[in-house]
Image 1 (cartoon, helix red, strand yellow):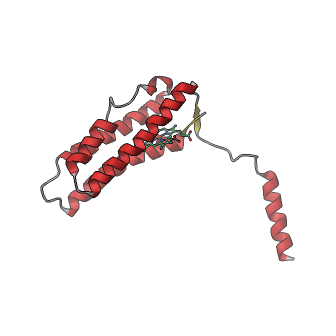
Image 2 (cartoon, helix red, strand yellow; image 1 turned 180 degrees about the horizontal axis):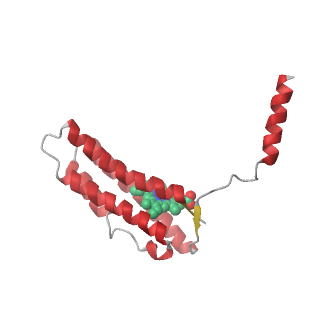
Image 3 (cartoon, protein in one colour; image 1 turned 135 degrees about the vertical axis):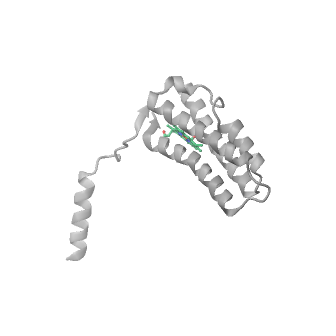
Length: 142
Ligand code: HEC
């Protein structure tokens, strides 16, 4: 019977599945207070990214540049790098550089932004979020 076969396959696959799905991301072992401050900083990154997007949605390139430069650029971090492996630090720096590059694009917005300029600005924005994404795919906090 079809439903029995389906159940059998389902049960068989459940029994070979590990209790929790394997997490391929490299764990970062942080002292509890550093962990809390790190996650808070990450939530701030999310806010900053949203501030940039909100400014872009209002076509306010100066505000978008300022948010990227002051919130996400190099030096804005709280020095978590010293707890992190080199690969993490490099990804963090790449994110900060992408934010600075975005700010450069946004401050040079022409008075009447063309479609081509918008494409460049949104591309530079995606260069930032791509860094968030790739680090999240590579690391997790223990
Ligand atoms: C260099 C690495 C790295 C970069 C770059 C990075 N993050 Fe994270 N972020 C992490 C790690 C590691 C965690 C913890 C993930 C986990 O344990 O599942 C995290 C967690 C978070 C969280 C969850 C916070 C919470 O309290 O649950 C948010 C939101 C977040 N990041 C946003 C961002 C945004 C937005 C960016 C880009 C602007 C960004 N992050 C860039 C490494 C990074």
